[in-house]
Structure formats: structure tokens, C-alpha cells
Length: 227
Image (cartoon, rainbow, N blue to C red; front, side, top):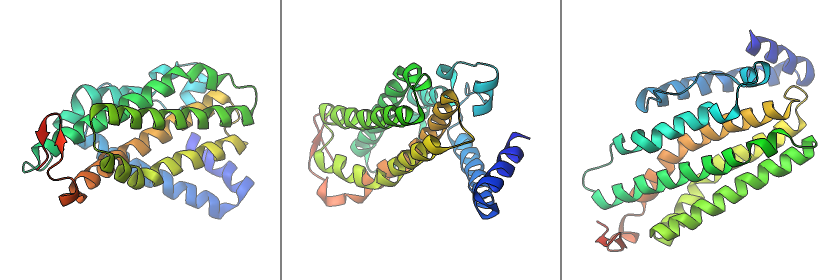
């Protein structure tokens, strides 16, 4: 019901082609999310929509992003199959994902109150963008502390640019939205966007570590030579 109403309002405000585009993205997003959740099932994850957090005052600390990421870090990532011929790259892959996911969620959760109580839409956008930028800088710093080779960090960054760009674009769209006018609603929608973008990191990290081939072979990671 809510999605139908939302599409109707988008059609009135931006045109029916825009509404059809939103509908297509929504359907594809649900298909991808269903496939990902079947592969990495978030057993404790809530199915609550953004509207729930606005209407019934549910805490954003219970948002699906944090529940799913908690599952990934505690259990899901370690269950992801990685080619057996790359045991050291497999360790690096899991370490990268755990660092990335835990750091992103830490920064977002720490700033929920500030984002939800922003003084204006422009202030919300500034705080949201700043939170994202600091999280990215922090997880790259932690990659280095963990001993992830610089070439891996740089290659992952280049693969992950579209996902980060999608989050940034969504933040800008939410800032201007006449539908998501509540800052808690904007924040919840941003968290959902981050969840979708984080799912692409699973493949960006895999593509990074498999694709480097000889450029990574022979380097050391956690006291072991990379195959």
C-alpha cells in the first residue's frame, strides 16, 4: 500500500516515467535482496520498512542493516565459499569484509542521533556525507593496520567506487526529497541504501583478490606467503 502511494506521489511530482523507473528499481532490489538473503540468511534480521520507523517510533538502532551485518560478521562471512586453491587470499577476503562491515556500521550507528535530529535538510546531507567519508577512511586505515597489501586496498577502492557513488547519490536525492521529509525517514532510507551497497562489496573484494593474480602472489599476509 505504501509503495503504491509512494509511486503515485513520485508520478505526480516527477512524471510517470520516473515512477516506472522507481518501480523497476524497487522490484530488482527486492529480487537481489531475496537472493542474497537466501545465500547469506540473516536469521535475526527485521523486515521492517522505513515507514515503520517513522510511524511507530522504532529505534533506528534496530534497523535491518545492523541486524544483517551482525549476522554476517558473527557467522555469515565465515560460511562464504572461496576457491580452495587460495587459502591465504581467503583469509584476506574474510578479514577485509569483516573490517569493512563492522567499521561502516560502527560509524553509522554512532551518528544515528545526530543524523535524525539534523537542523535542516542541508545539515542532514552534510552530516550523512561526512559520516560516510569518515567510515571509508577508517576502514582503509584498518585494512593497512591488518596488513592488507596496498595494491589490494587500491584495487578494491576502484572496484567499490560505484557502490559508494550510489550511496552518495542517494544521500543527495534524500536531501531534496519532498516525500522523505522526516530526518529519521531519510536516515533509515540511507541505512537501507548502505545495506544494498555493502552486498556488492562481497563481489568487489572477490574480484580484487582473484583478479590481481601475479601482482599479489609472493607477498606476505599474516606471516604467510600469498599463493
